[in-house]
Length: 207
View: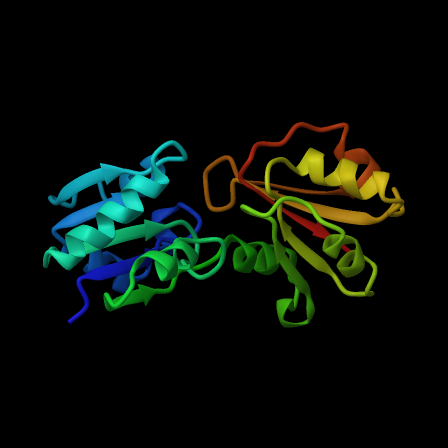
């Protein structure tokens, strides 16, 4: 039986947690995740360890080593573990260790639902951990709606697109802080994005 569980927790609100995610966490010995991920399980009485940008490598290795020792470890991943989540690095670290993946609701899915986009026909691209590349330009110009998880800020991605000659009047939507009380959805043009200030938890849609 697997002792390491990669648990998708959705975009951050408890209402998007699955029953499977909750039951997996409740049966674990060790729970590892970001501060906001751990806050979803504040009432669960297990050992909790905070994962952040400063210690992500250390914590992922710790999760694997404790699972190898027989501990039941739940590793929390915002959204879905397989989309800009913890699955990719764990595949490199796990070796022969068996683990399972509990899927979660991605911010891309919720953004598409809020904007009523049939996202099976959209370009979907994540720049998390990759940075911006010209691949984005080819997608932007292929005639389909493009849903983007920016690497840093919406403003940086927008400036890149404008610098590359994308029409400044292209229609865009920005979904910010999806599922949180301060959730915002803004419909504007590419050029007008730079007149606003956005946080880091955003999904950018270019039509």
